[in-house]
Amino acid sequence: MIYLDDDRDYSEVIETWIRDFIDTMDDGVLTSGDDSGTAPFGVKIIFDGYGYDEENDLENNDTNTMSFAVFVHKNSLTEEFPPHELTPWALIHRPKEEVCIWAWYDVNADLVDIIPFEDNNSTELDHDFVKQLIFDIHKRTYG
Image (cartoon, rainbow, N blue to C red; front, side, top):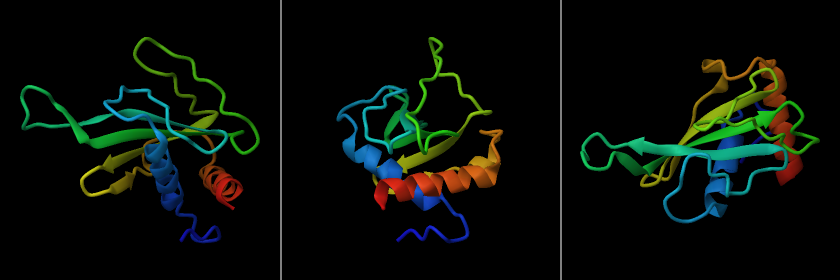
């Protein structure tokens, strides 16, 4: 259970979003940038790639390890997520307007590992604001 008045650990919220996204995304081999799953209104989640299998010399994608990027815009509570500018190889992250939270999913163990955004400089937004925004979006979406 997620307590919205806890010590502000948002990882369980992001895990819920990732699991819902995985349950609704396209089947089969995915390509980086795939956003076919369902995310809360105002939030963008993308498949960011597979893990790396060091023991398999022919194909290094470890399809049992999946990476995701969860983007929460400063206006995500009330507005649709604004599209990113794109380059031929990536999207352009906007740290002044959004946070990006990375997550890994281990298919075999059914475990989600959330990388704290506070540890990787993925936003210039106030961290307390971001945490409250995540909880408010979750409450709006899941009640």
